[in-house]
Each structure stands twice: as C-alpha cells, then as structure tokens.
Length: 445
Image (cartoon, rainbow, N blue to C red; front, side, top):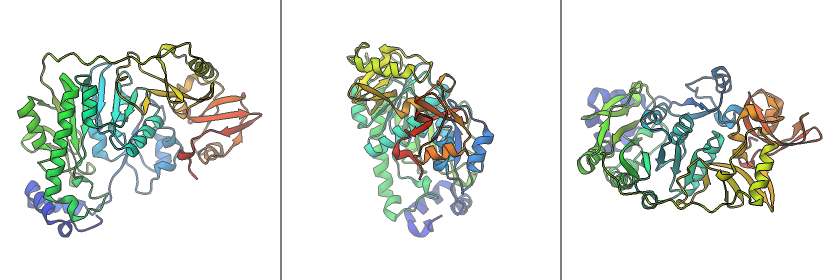
C-alpha cells in the first residue's frame, strides 16, 4: 500500500470497519500491504499455447510483478488481455445470459476489458462500446483493434445520447459505472477528498443517472450487468435495490460463482471481491433481469447510404483479394471518413455517430486503398496469402515491433506478418525487404 489508509481518510476507514467487522477489517488492512495482482486472459480468437504466453510473461495466467506485457510480441498480436483477477471474473459473468446474435451495449467501456471479453467469446453478437471521455475512447478502440475484433462499434457519447438513439435496442447492457474507486487502493494513492462520504454520495448519484439511461436502452426481459470497483453499500447494493424497487428488476444468480468471491450484503445473488480473499482487487457485480413486457417499437435505424460499386470500395476489395483468400460481402462494406469498414450482418447502429464500425479494412489515398492495421489484426491467419511467420523471440519480430525493416523472401506486396502463427500487422515486401507498416503509436523502441 502506498499510504496508511487509516491516516489518509478516517471516513473511509470507519465505513470499512462497519462493513467488514473488526477482524476482517484487520485482514483487509494487511492485504493492502501486498502488491496488486494481474492476470492474462487468453483471446479465444487467437490460437496460442499457454506455454508461449508463459514464456513471454514469466507466468500465466497470474503475472509476476516483473512482467511487462506491453513490450511482448504476443500481447501486440492480441493473444491475451491483461486485467486484475476480479475484473476478469466479472467480465465473464454476463456471457452465458446473452442470446444469440444479440445487440449488446457496454455503456462505460474503456479501457475495454469487459467489451473484449464478451466480443471475443461471442463474435455472433453486435457490441456497441461507448466511452464518454474521448481520449479513453481511443484507448478502447486500440484494444479492440489489437484483439482482432470485428463485431464492435465504438462511440464517445453521453449516456442520455445513447438512450435517445437506442431506446429498447439492446438485449444486454454492461454498466461498469464510474465510482469512488475504493477497491483500487493497492494500485492508486488517494487523497482524502477521493474517499470522503461526500464523494461516495456524488458517485452514487451519478451512477443512478447512468443506470436510468441504461434502463431505457435495455429491452424488456433483457439482462444488465452492473459493476463497480468500490466497496461501499451506497454505490453498490443500494443501487441494485433502487432498480428492484423502482423498475422491477430481478437479480440473477451467476451460472458459476467466481472463485474467491463473496455474496453481496443482503443481496445473495451479487458478487463481491476483497483483496484479503486472494481474488484480486476490490469489485462488486450483480446481474439483473429487466421485467418482461411489450416494449414500444425501437426507433428505426436509418440505413447508411452505400454503393457496392463505389470505386473506393472496389479498390479495397481488390486489395483484400491480394492479401487473403477470405472473401467479403460488398454489401457489408461502408465508407467512413477516408476509409472503409466491414460491418456485421444486419448492422443495427447507423444512428450512432461512431469512431469505428466493425473492422477497418482500408484507408484511401485519393482512390488508392491502403490496408489498415485493424484488418491485419482481425485476419484469418490460415487464409493469409504469402504470409511470413516468425517466433516471438525472432530478430524479425523484434525489428518489426521497433519500426524497422528486415529481410523477407516472400512475394512482393502488402502481407500479413504473423508471430507464432497469429496475425501481428502489415508489412510491404519489395525486392526481398519487408517495409514496416506497424503503426508508429504502437511501436516499442
């Protein structure tokens, strides 16, 4: 722990003693002296052995303190996502309750742990991942790209704007709401104002407003995952009770209770994590079902005007055919900005201004198509044409991650570079040299 919490904030200390009782509170204080925990969650869309991930990180799934995943080739290729254990466990809770081909909203999605867990496990679903803070929305988008997800739309809108455009549109909603963050004390040093009673009440009021908008988005009979990374009752159980009493929601027992978790206070269906139990940092989560009923018809989603014969779309599809054997439906290619994107079948989110709709295929320089990194990350590795493949510790991969060229005896043109047989990014081969097309912002120097 970076500070003695009893001296940092007496109000928080008193809340925790009342919540836990004296003996458990002492165990909690002792646990704050331990380092925070992290795990690697494997991406089911990328086939990599546990042994290779272990070799890159020095441990798997639990990471040693010395692990630096941001510098690893398999991390760059989206083979795994790093989370603290409690957050990873909560991310999986809603997946069994999501129907096939569902519309799913993650209202407060950055940096992307819950979005990527669900979207990777359920590629049949159409996920709208929203983050109101634009800088964090860009981080969310970067993680979606890295994990090779094709089924995510990324927005940066207020919750009330989401509900106005998407009333009754979603079969499932994730609301990992902003909170006072009491559960992150092993990771962050707080000043007294951050843990005050006033802060808790303000956060609870904000959470309730977000949940009200989530309720408008969720169709009758749909499922809501509500979660926080804080401990107090006001931001957790009391918000659930408000949904139950005011809107008729029913809490749902998880199909499998996460290891090292506790039940909620007077709410046995809820899940709580405390650091003294060995399950990671602090977290609260509860699954809830919205009452069944007849919903007003969802607002018709205006189809985006597109032309499959557009010269730019044709140029992008022609380029793709030179890179992969996979074939793409021209009717699912849309123009967005100075590029084109490949959307889900029966795409439902045209009404939402978006940073990304599905998979970015290409950017355009005049009428010439240039493949986008997202296209490489989301590629089917087995269908990639003339695609060089190197070990994670090879000099070629080290050169690529650093932004350098390297020798490569493959057919000229844009090629998908693979590491351990999974896509990493684009190179452009010319006369035996692989020119580096790895985005500059991702490079490891």
